Amino acid sequence: MSEVCYMITITERSREKAFIRLYSEHGVDLSFITYGNGTATSEVLDTFGLEASEKSIMGSFVTSDNFTSIKKELQRRFHIDVPGTGVVFIIPLSSIGGKKQLSFLLGSQEYVRGEESTMKNTETELIVVIANHGHTETIMDAARSAGVGGGTIIHAKGTGAQGTDKFMGMVIAEKKEMLCMVVNTASRDNVMRAIMDNAGLRTEAQAVVFSLPVSATAGLRLAAGNDD
Image (cartoon, rainbow, N blue to C red; front, side, top):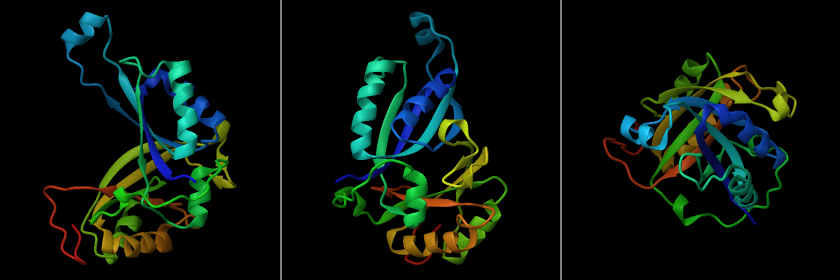
């Protein structure tokens, strides 16, 4: 038995394709990528003879069993345990917007549902929506109708299996937008359902929705039925 997890990879942008190839070999056929910069000081970079570089931040979906195999390959092929080569970690998902979206996210990975994680018994959750570019207003209108006050947009790109533009019969548009919103666990299902009904896989937005457990928050006022 296994869990479905969101795998986050942070590495040099120049190594992005190598990571994608490795993941594809293990059946991880879908990733979403955005970019950032490292924060090492110039003194540290000079000491190790390094140059400041742009980072790739990749979000993929794996089963916990599959990640065990992926981790071994990351250590063997990429020496991921050596500082400066990258960071990969997983977060267990607490909810996914339906069986079709689960199949879409996991692709060819084998998945046998296991026991629920105790980490998922939280009062607050982070809902993440990944959708085609240009549909954020439709998604936010749907979320607001279920009581969400607002969210944060992250621009990204999507990658399909072996560089194709289709995955499981669906077009993987290169330009993607990720919307993140924190909600009460009690209202999670209503929010996700509203988004799926108005911007799901059968619409132009082709939104994929999942949620992650949040153990604690600060700066949020989440009254029941009135999420900000």
